Length: 215
Image 1 (cartoon, rainbow, N blue to C red):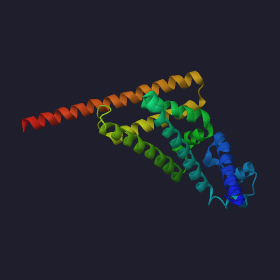
Image 2: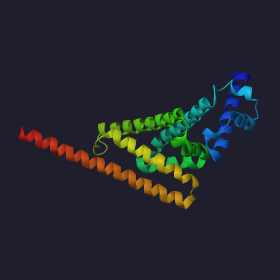
Image 3: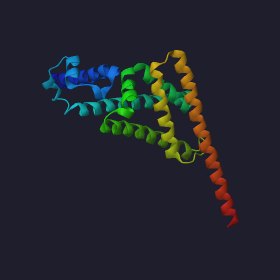
Image 4: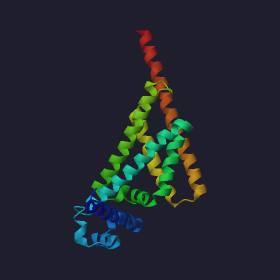
């Protein structure tokens, strides 16, 4: 990478970091381009060398959230092989994300509902991506007969991801003890979802066996 390319990347990241820092107080949609460039220490004209407009910057922020969290979740999959608990390890990983990247979490908390539509669509895209990866994990486990089967895998994965995101962002304003209690609560709720899905799968199997026997 040339010095010029390296400087360009640094300036782009400085803009992203400035937007994250400012958005923690009033939310990204309320930010102006001039506020962001002033915080980043660059001229407004320089902004347009990196982003089309503020909406483009917002989408870049969401991409950064997704990239970092996906990297952490991949690391969590390796930790699962040691600890053995997918649910507990995944929740612990998300809480580490909350602790280490508070401004990214503030971005999600503030704008997942009230942000501009393209912004919300981008966040929804990231949550769907996590749900798809989780569904793939479930399918892999079931193909290897590692765990009892689940019913409606895509819906189960979606519910679990949304539960962790929607409740996990609340940990931002909590102390260590409160976060521990929240983590335990989320783990219990995730296990209830899994248990319910397994009960439903068993009931469906019994119905199929009964139907096959009667025929």
